[in-house]
Length: 132
Image 1: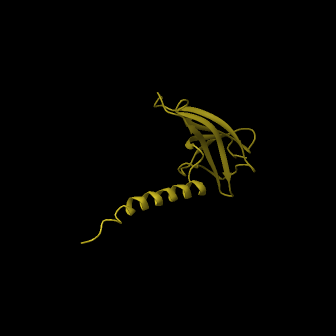
Image 2 (image 1 turned 90 degrees about the horizontal axis):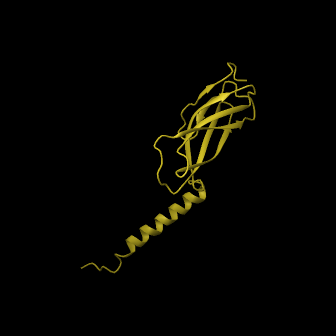
Image 3 (image 1 turned 120 degrees about the vertical axis):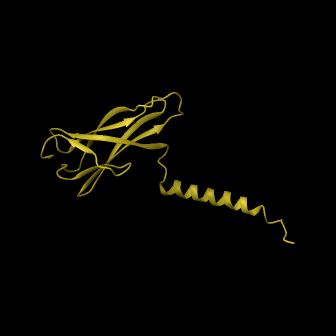
């Protein structure tokens, strides 16, 4: 008859492995210090082809507290990410509010595609026809 004295090790091992995985994800950067990505709705160029006015969607306090909009560039793509700290919840409107932020590019937008860093989807860009 098999002994039952080692049966308790399975749940303990599961908890230990789960804790190690969560710590590894946290250290590698899988979480963003309490910030969550928001939807980037569109962008607009103006007189300066190195500046984009980004429109993004947030629920607003007490649910979202928008914190920043970041930009990453390469030769073919400009990636925009809007961030918010999640609040304690409470009564929130289901409809988000549109907010804007200005971001500076290292070089004019030109023909580069603009994408939402949250999901990789293209972002519509309004503005000057040559975009810089």
